[in-house]
Image (tube, rainbow, N blue to C red; front, side, top):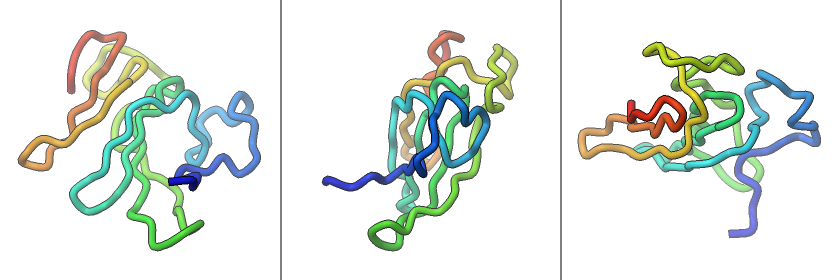
Length: 104
């Protein structure tokens, strides 16, 4: 496609710990039924949702759908290196929580 859909805004991802627009080692990407883009931000241990793009260079800041930035663990609210995302037939988001050996 030739476009950067998830911007880094010229920031070093190493120094952008917890900064919502920056992603560190993005893995799985899924498109939600409403057109939103969901990204597994693996090294930040979270899943981000970017609103549906309204055109070229119109990406808005994401919201955190799952996980807690830079805080991994095995409790229900935490992820450990999420690597893939998909939507079930009912619209529920499924996340491969890699280092916890589970799908949430």
